[in-house]
Amino acid sequence: MSRRIFLLAALLTLLTACGRSTPTNYYLLESSLGPVQADGLPAKSLRVAQVCVPEYLDRGGIVSRVDGQTQVIVAQFHAWAEPVSNGVRRVTQEVLTPPLLAEGINVLPSGDESSGDFTLLLDVQRLDGNFDDKAVLETRWTLRNRDNAILGRGIYASEEMVRGKTYDLLVGAESRLVRRMADYLAEKLPPLMRGKKS
Image (cartoon, rainbow, N blue to C red; front, top):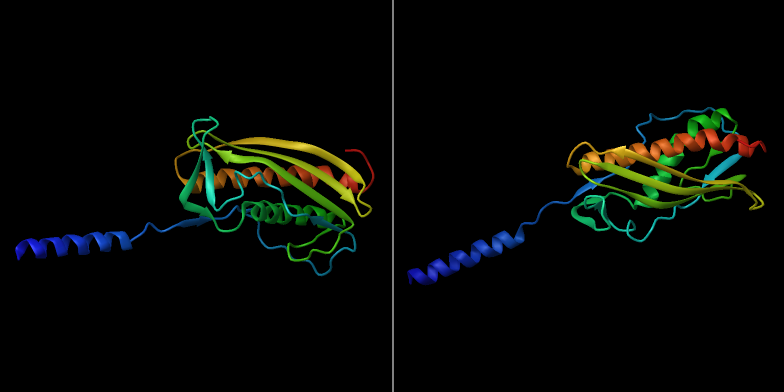
């Protein structure tokens, strides 16, 4: 009888343990900018197109590298709260909005898929990092006008230190990389839209 009770207690403990799962933590890329206010918007507009990302990034779990090698780790319990392509697009739009408004260009929000006077295409080649080392962003960008003619294109690449072993720190470093890319584009794009070489 006591053996039967012991087995039932062990089975109950096992079932209870299986019922508990580690909670998933969700993360966002952040621009760290306050809200923008404008009484009116310029007639000319820039649309940031859907961002392309490589297949290894196109997943829910956050990707990190193993000691700078080709091996990657996809986190099981640390995930993006939105597709990483949407996060890059959103942060780019947020960072571009104030400087381009000053240039007379309205950056269309993500929900507005109408064609703008200009379209910015971003093709992320890499956005990952190592804990206690560095995060890396490499993006190819193209600016087109309403007639689909290319006004400019280039490659932006940068690195940012990851000072620790948490996903908060890794995502923070990746957020700073995307913000720096958008700051770079905020300087690079206006002369191209005015028809001047930058």
